Length: 271
Image (cartoon, rainbow, N blue to C red):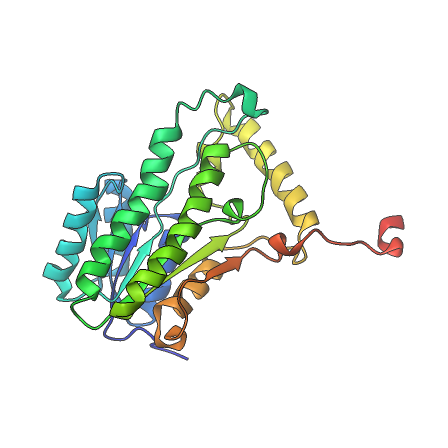
């Protein structure tokens, strides 16, 4: 199908890079007009300029509900409506070898961006959609919110919270024909990994990331790296009319990671 989002207006938070940028590009290619929201003004303005008249940029810190409310209002003022809200902006907590080493200094900020930002975006978008015939809200969780593990505890907790909030708000907002779903990406190369590590040089970070991603690829059923476009395809489905009977779901885009580790045949182990 082509032009699936003709006539629709979307907001994508964290839309200046990574998964958010991939979603913006996909939505515009399918006919949507998009408000790119991001805390990084220069990057966001430059990115918007490369796309053209179908997008506009707004500098927003989603941890501030007042700014989120102003973002939604600006989308209505600019494009006259709001059909799709993608609450994608997110940050990671610092990675620690052991939870016993975690001082929890970044807990409040992680929760404010990853949870409060999603809740405010859902609420304010739904207020508009409830009066205009409904819409689609897409919240970005993570495989880290589904599958237990260590290293970035505040991040995992925040993404698990997004899943439960998504399901709960889907139940309440269904009355207004507002659908709320979540996407849980796994192992998508984005700048967020670098933000979870500290005290490493660029070379050390690159070696660490390469080693980590190689190990993750070996463990997952689909042994390739995921891309922002893979996530954007899922977002396109949830944003458009093909998913009109889908709400309260969590779509994993993880190459099968959450399904379980690869079971190797004996012949493969010998090789």
